[in-house]
Length: 307
Length: 307
Image (cartoon, each protein chain N blue to C red):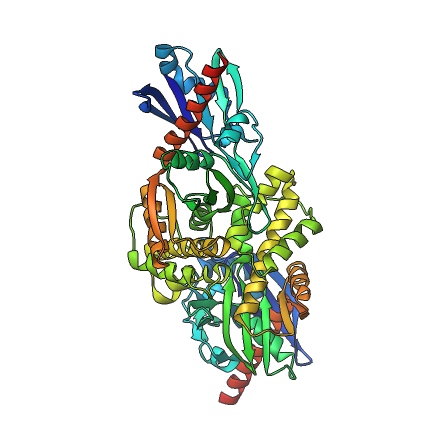
């Protein structure tokens, strides 16, 4: 029995797991506050898991995400790209708290395609999770992990060679909540036409996001577009601009792997398909647990070999 | 005696003016809340100007800005580009309130270079103000009005033929206040090196704002940059990206007219000078009062001719 967790900025997801027939199986789940809340993270962990620890004793805990950053619990320095799963594992930090053995895995850093520094924490584990399940993956592969901070990662064999971050989800959120471009949408309303229109403009070779964003407001003012239409237009515009930029930054791939929530994966799929790029999808939870299984299995092997 | 005013989204600026030797002269100033506050704008006007009206009687009032929009006092429809000062004047709306004669000037709309709808309210008057003081201006001129919603306007003779909006100031503000990229700066601290670095990246042909924004955070995490350095980096990045996009959208001009606050004008000047483009600067207040003078003088002429 062990506890695996992805403790990000906005949410902490913990999985109680067990190896059943050599397959790591999630037997229970918990979610708690992210690390951006000004919390005592140790206390927060023990509050969240008291019943599991009571039932199963001091089981080992393996964590990824901002829990290892300067706004987290313990600072685990970034590993620079290119790097693989073995280096990630070798740079993990282990410590005991209240008698429970914890391991926090590091994030990755790189110089991205624009010669700028870039960082990720958590997505690397999802990528290694995907790789662990694809023994015959191509020598070179582009993976997109869409979300608050969309990552585009270039894989070469078993390594992550470089990546780039696109704060698409965060831009959408701050513009919805705090700008004159539109108002927040609090329901699930969706306008496919608005999304497609934004997507086409974002993807078009001559458009530039800084000069097309304001159309979100102008369309409401001049064309009486609703807030839902404007919101979907903005969503399409941002995703289109991100996909276009990624195609300029990386080689033109005929296939991109998407790892994210089903909804956001499907929006990126539409964008990539418009450029005749095929996609495969995986959910973040699947990739996270596969990645943590791959890392913890190696850890167990190492511990076995030492003993 | 008359009252001229630029009643924008965030602030209302009113000027008590008098013609002295045929020159409109500002004799007093007032500032009040913008139209985005959910106010009774008529009441707000009379509260603000009660002493002026008491002293000088029911003097005429001329207003520009969002006061004429759907979040303003009276909806004055947009005039489409290309257009000149005469059409703007012909589309003004006049009405009486509490015995005071008001005129609200319309804003402009256009299809911009990306074939998207675009709108401005207030900047057109500043542009006509600039034109009124430059009888020998070139047949074609690019004017930049940097600010919350930076406008790039193409002038042909005495007309505004098209324009584009770049929400640079608003992006900077929402990202400073509501994203993980940086925290708001509440003092006047400035880091020239950070600004220059951001500017160079924003202006570079291969960079893309959606893929370079996140460096604002990564530089703090990996290179221990301060929040001030990061803030100036982001400012440079956004201005650089805006200037680069404008140079792609419009013909390459060797000279650009800047109309804005002294601080923001000087930042855009640095950016344009890096591309070997000369600049002339004018302040927004100067351009606004010149524009309102040009419009109101014509109005007086019309009224004179009718009588």
